[in-house]
Each structure stands twice: as structure tokens, then as C-alpha cells.
Length: 336
Image (cartoon, rainbow, N blue to C red; front, side, top):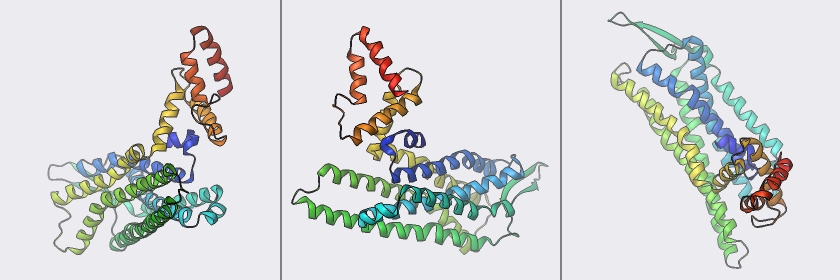
């Protein structure tokens, strides 16, 4: 739904929402390629083959790395937009930001690509005679401690420290500007409230990322630093599975945060669903409605303007039956 709304709603064509749509793509990769595979790998026996084992580990690292880098990118963009608004408009153009996002996905893919080399399937014959297959990294082909240390430092601690610092400076900057402009009445309350609302949603996304991935990072540190840690026990297996699922919960909660904390996202969903109607051509009508909505915003028209698409559609519903079909046909022809 996030990807759909950002793609078709003109209201959500901003830079921040473009980043959040890419974050939603990473979350979708987790849902499709990681959750079921992790449950299969730890609760039963891996039955998907050696190649899909490599793909599973690759996508897992790809989505996590891309999510971290996109969250940092959103934070930096918001910081520049608040602290240096004039320079930000001239420097951070849409073309450059799309190039940066493309580089983010490329960097994440390069970082995750070694999984195709050292991830394998291993077979173990049980006492019952059954063969247990597990998908895991071959410790003989890579240094597990170095890799986990890099993930902990550069994909968790450093990004969190950077985002905490920048969002703190953003909060201080907004508070100072609000205090300076509130007295003379130079800044409308609605504009100031929307700005704080957007940054509140972004901070909630970052906090959810920190909380959901903390158990995973803590388990990895415990595994390397405690010499008595038994990796073959049932407790270790269930702990590993639990921390993976908690980290995947972050991908599940991100869209809910957008839905409940982003007013523009809520309005975008209502616009798309409302303009879809019952004609069966929901996507086409939704695209036409967003074009009309964008024109309305650019011309400074509100929802009560006689040329507003929403007002026209409402007038169609309230008009007599004889004129309804003619009006609806003319509007649909214009939209489509």
C-alpha cells in the first residue's frame, strides 16, 4: 500500500516519501524472501536448495543494509532541508537524490554479494536416520567475528549515533525557529504543526529500527564474548529464531507507522480509494484524480472550489439521475 500510494498520489511525490517508498521495498523483500525461509531453516529442514539458500542470505543482508542507509539518507536530507533550506533546494535535486538512492541499493548489493560465496547448505544425519539440512555461512570461508563487528559498528551503532545527533539538532532548530516566529505571528500554526508531525513520524521509524534490531545485535555480541555460549543447544536455536523474527517485526511495523502517524499518507489513501469509485477501473481513475488534485494544489484551490475534482464528483452523486450519467461520462473522459 505504501508503494502504491507513493507511486500514484501526487500528494506524496515529495523527496522524503520517495525515500520511504524505497524503505518499503526493502521491507517487502524481507516479507517475501526472509520470514518463511528463516522459520524453515530453524524449525524444520531446509528444502529450497543451495541456490535459494544463497539468495535468502543475500536478500537478508541487502534489505537490512539498504534500510539502514535509507534511514540515514532521510535523516541527512531532513537536516539539510531544515538547517540549510536555500542550499538544499539547489543542491539536492530530484535527479541527484534518485542517483543517490540508486547508489545506496548498489552499495547494499555489493556488501551482501559475498554471501553467494560463503553461504552453503549443510547436511547432518540424525540418530533417527533422517537427514537434517541447514542453510548457514561456512565459517571456513569468512571471518565471522570481523563480519559481525562490522555489522554492529557500521550498520547499527554509527547510524544510530548519527541519526540521534542530527534529529536532535533538527528538533533544536525547529524549536528555535518556532519560538522566534510565533510571537510576531509569521509562521502559521498549521505549517509548523505539519513539520513537527513529519519529523515525529521519522523519529518513530528510527526508534522502532533501534528497538527491533537491538536483541539481534545483543545476541551476536553475547555469542562472541561468552565462551560458555552453547550454539548447539535448543535454547540457542530458539533465541536465534526469536531475535530474527523481532528484527523482521520492524519491517512489519514501518507501514503501520506511516498509516497512523502520517496525515498525508492517510489523505493519499482516501483520495485513491475515493476516486476509484465502483467503476472497476480504480487505478486509472486514481491516477486521474491525483492529477486533478495536483492541479488544484498548484493553483491554490481548496476542496470547496467549484473546479475541484472532489467537488465535481460530489455534485455528480447529488445530481438527478438524468444528469448524473452525462456528467460522469464527461468527467471520466477527461480523466482517462
